[in-house]
Structure formats: C-alpha cells, structure tokens
Image (cartoon, rainbow, N blue to C red; front, side, top):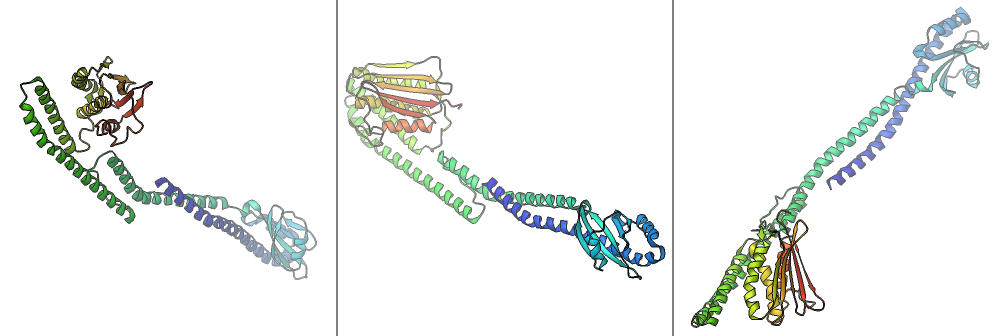
Length: 429
C-alpha cells in the first residue's frame, strides 16, 4: 500500500510537472530567439543611422572599413549598396533585399538561420540595406542549459512529492500493519494482544473494534473454561458415591480393580479441570518425548487388551529420542483417544498396532492401526457417536495435532480396519 501510494503520487506529480514544464520549455526557446533577434535589430538600426551620415562622406570604402572592424556580437553584417556592391559579409541580392529597399524593416527566415533587414535612405534618393544574419545555433544559445535546469527542477519536484507521500503513507500503513500483526497473533491464540488505535479516524475505529473483539473472545473462552471446570467438579459427587460402594468390595479382586479404575477416573477429572482453566497459550512451546508417553499409555491399555484377548504390538524405531512440540497431557489425550476408539468400536479379540517413527529430519509420526471395521464416512464430525462414544475422540486428535503444527489423517485399511497417522513437528522447527 505504501509503495502504491508513492507510485500514484509520483505519476500525478510527473504529469503535472510535464504539463507545466513542456510549455515553459517552449516559452524559454522563444524568449531566447526573440532576445537574440531583438539584439540584431538594435545593432542593425544603430548601424543604419551611422551609415546615413557615413555613406555620403566616405562612400563604399569607408563603410566597408567600419563594417569589417565593428561586428557587434560576432554577427554576420552585410551592407548592400543601391548599385549592388556589398560591404562586409558577402550575400546575394534577393527578394528580401529588394523589399527592404522599399523602406520597410523586417525579419526573415533564410538558409541557416534568420536575418534582419533595415533600409538606409541616402540624401540622393538611393537606398542601401543593412542585413544582419543570425545563425540557428546562436538563436538557441543557452536554451539547452535552461531545458536541463527545468528538467532537474521537475525531477526534484517529483522526488519531493514522493518523499512527502511516503511520510504520509507511513502514517496510514503503520497502524494497518500493526493491526494485521495483532490479528495474526490473535489467530495464533494470543488473547492478550491489543493495538494502540492510531492514524486516520477510520483506522482508529477499526483498532478500537479489534480491541473490543479480542476482549470479547477472551471473556467467552474464559466463561467456557469455567463452565467445563464446573461440570467436571459436579462429577466428583457421583464418583465419591461410587467409590464408597466400591470400597465395600475392596477385599475382592474385582473391587480392587474397580477402585484402581476410579483412581484413574479421578486423575482424569483433575486433568480436565486443569485443562479447562489453563490459559490457551500456556505450554505452547512445550517439548515432550512422544515415545515415552505412548509406552506409558500402551502399558495402561494393554492390561485391558489382555483381558479382552486383543493382540497388540508397540513398535518404536531406534534411535530416539522422539521429542515433539506438544505438552505431555495433550499427547496422553491423543493416545487415549486413539486406543479408546479401538476398544469402543471394535469387538473383543480385535488387535491393534502402535508405532512411533521418524519422518524426515523434522517430523515424528504416531501410527495406529486396527483390524476392525474401519471408519464410517461421518466419523470425523464432532458429536458423532457409536457404541456409547461421545464422538469427540477423533476430533481431539485432529485439533491437538493442528495446534502443535502437525496433521492427523484417518483412513480405512483394505480389506478392513482403521489407520490413523498423527504427524507432529520437532520443537526446533
């Protein structure tokens, strides 16, 4: 925008300068020509007055001596006598000379320039003519210098206009650029970003509206976090009741497993509350060993897999480490969501495969495959449910991957089964 404003101002200034300087250049040329010709006329008339006295007294020889010895401004002066003799610069007797003998003074264009003709009326009635020739190069003397000066003046005016326009454009562009940067930061999750409204009234109004929008978004997200935390708190009452009932059977193996599951559920509720109240950008630059998280969660789900006779495999390429730009809690949620979907949407006895592998120099992949029926077409829609699922698992995987700068792809295998590839960047990239 700043460059475009400068270009527009430069073009307009250049057109105005040309519209002014081109006629002025022509005027300078005409003034220079008139100045030289007026000087030639003055010299010719002065010489004609002298010759009025000199011709009767000294004749041709005296006039020739005067003309040869006194050539004003290095002009080519000729005196054509009535009998045809020429004193000074040789010339021919043409229609201009004959017209001047009739008593008229005038200018005339001749070959190589212009000439001034002035008659000299003698007492005996004869008429001589003073002819002063001015060559074309003398008519244009100093015109080129004047034109160059005008051109430099025009360039200076254009440069000055560009400098002024650039300064004005900066006052317009800088607030817009700051607003753009703030909008990008807001889009990246920085809810505390604000702009200092500046510039023209319209941009000031936009800046104020942006600040109000950012504040409103922050307030809405805070309300959503508080609502989620409140809902999680409400789960504690029924969980406590279930725990009391389970403790009545703590002496049995099933009761012990139930208490362990309740402990895990308590930790999950605590995690949900912390996540709901966590600022959106907290931990944005975290770094976690993906392999360690996957190993831990696979061991947790492996016990349930063994009970359901599900064969499972965990493969981690060597060497490590497999550090990715994501928080440990987020990676745990991703792994739990993937494995939870296997148990929720496939029958008992269906196995699954987990792998952590490096992809290129800056990417690490988490791969999950199962031998179930695969994904239905609408499985990626938030709120999709099946077999008692809330439908949020795959959406959590996708959002967590994208928030970390990665990707998540969900495909069905042939002849049957599901495949999920979560690709995450290393923190140094």
